[in-house]
Length: 360
Image (cartoon, rainbow, N blue to C red; front, side, top):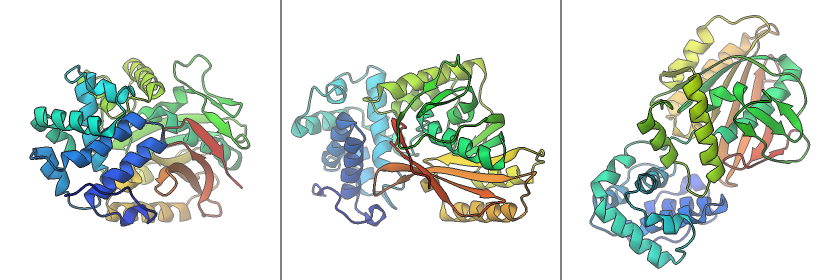
């Protein structure tokens, strides 16, 4: 397989070739402020040419490579080798000391050959990227909903990974000058805010629960180290937030269950609901990983439950997912009883470095 050109202006979901998908993912990393990670991902094009197990498996990848986040799976494996001190040379790439793509290609290929079968299992599942910074969008949405449905919320997250964002009631937020959360929190989020600030108002998270088909236990060092491997090395603030979240979980672990997202939503909707508490389904950067049948089942279940919602027992759905054309997160909200239409509230950096309020 020859080296592919960079992804063109077609819709990203039209990209079928592995080479183009790798090039697109590298461009995405570059646009997200991770040039070293972008160079490492581009070097995967050279790995495709090697007689390695990971090269062969990537080259013969079936399905939509970007939907599966295949380049990010293996990038996590390389970062894990660096974090464990087993391949310190990769630090030259991550720290911007090696910028010549040819030299990067050679180092990544050498690493792939040396650690071939250590890297291979990283292709077995999608990356776990539990980013606390993304909760800024969710909290902004809760502030917006507070003025419409009331201040009390029962949060339910699908694709929760390690459950970090289910702990957002313990974070301190500064969203364009609007402060929410405990003042003494060890995890503080103050993204660069663009546009008008979100509405002010009380937010009382009375409960928070999450599910994942492969949940991560933050209190288990092996699992937390794997989660760190999926954080891009340039993102030092993200790593600091992850360390803070790990310490927070060690004091009081998040309420996290291993469950299929569709079943979790069905169980959530069947559970008793207290008057005056808005039941909230939310998710961040996970919808793309669900099978179409699961997406359809969740959508139908929410619409049916929404048709039965009352002012005393409201229902809301908050999604913060990637627009694959703009590289931005878009946070949208739908609630019942209400106009039942999606409302776009924010656009943001993929990891929450900045947030722009775009609500009408």
